[in-house]
Length: 286
Image (cartoon, rainbow, N blue to C red; front, side, top):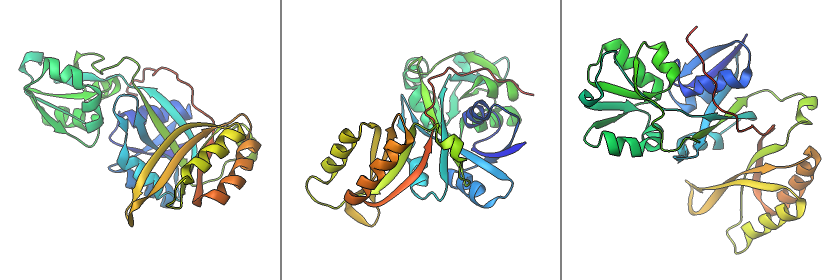
């Protein structure tokens, strides 16, 4: 059985994504920060992988998780796109009009902002480390009048009642999770890869980014994501993280040769198989 590090408590969306990705029994290490996830994968000999959410279709980038990726000494082995369905959950017997406080992760607040503004405009919002820990605290402390925004799995796991279902702003609410490992994948698996994530820096001069984009156009490789982050050491310099999609791994490898001539400190964070836009599946407490 593989041991996998995730962010958050039991029944968090990270756990749901991990169990869907591996499709086999796994042992979970619950971590309190993205840095702890990375450290578990790097230093714990029993830990074979980790998972971190990096972006959401409603709330955008999970910036602090991307910052952790920039410090990676790991490899991205894969990705999972999870349809996130948020529910308002509380102690059994709670009436929705008696809820005076809602607890959840900051990204969940953004994803459910329309519902909160319409139904609970005067309710106090309390940010938590993850959605499942908010549900756990309500259950363990028997907090009356307090609700959490969390998954159906968290509601079932901690014995809470769903007061309102699917309260996210959009039905097609997807979060992208990256699968991390310290081990290189087998060459046979690498040949099935059609996506890569790389980082690089550029000289601070006119046209430097345009040269990179031209190389991508000429290589017949699709640029699916581009994010820039200011360097802490220089206010006018940036590091770029990009996702590339290709039909054959050798096309990507040829492109790397060209990119190393026009970029600085290029690093391949990983090549992997692109995830399908598949719906979330129901998980239950074992």
